Amino acid sequence: MATETCAVCDGEFPFDSTVHLLVHTNTEDGVLEWYVCQQCYEQDVASLLE
Ligand SMILES: [Zn+2]
Image 1: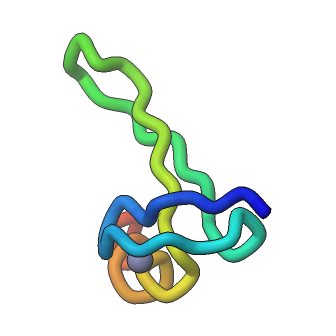
Image 2: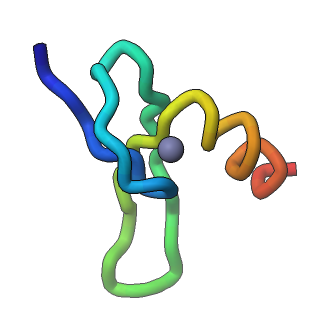
């Protein structure tokens, strides 16, 4: 089963347990694709998006 690396905690998680984020930046990087685990999403990312 495919795994993704969490962009926050660097852990490896099954694809189904990750949240896919598209982060729009103002730099030449353009759009970043992040996968974060559910735990990091709830702890860190949800607060960033408020
Ligand atoms: Zn994580």
